[in-house]
Length: 164
Image 1 (cartoon, rainbow, N blue to C red):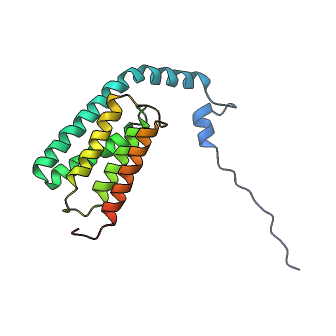
Image 2 (image 1 turned 90 degrees about the horizontal axis):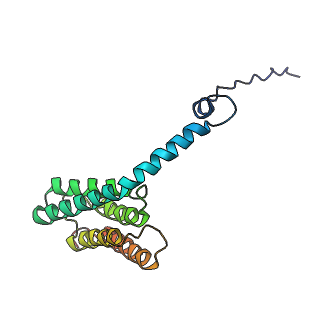
Image 3 (image 1 turned 135 degrees about the horizontal axis):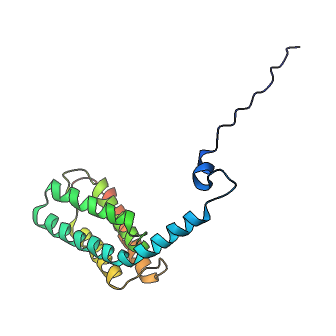
């Protein structure tokens, strides 16, 4: 019978534990409290930041509507993508969802293919309404129905054969 070699275990250091708790048995609660206080202070600026993002989106939409240039399309995509990433942090999950739908539309259409202006407008207008009415909870039935309709329309456009 063959002799088995002893098993040797290697336990790498737990770097995450060391980073959150300094390696002394738990998270640094004082650091977590400071972080929460900093976030609370920033929340007052969230409304202003969201308003700036919405204003930027309306500006790039207007520019794209006028020019239909690739640069304007890319700016529209970047702005929608930025809003998608930041809106939930700013307590606007429905805006994040609409911006995700708009980003998907622009990103998945072939470069050079026009992005349907009425569908862009519908997304931007939805974001404007959600922001204006301060719909900061993801349970508003009307807004959810609007999000679902926009998602469905984007899926239709992306599924359509090129040129139609």
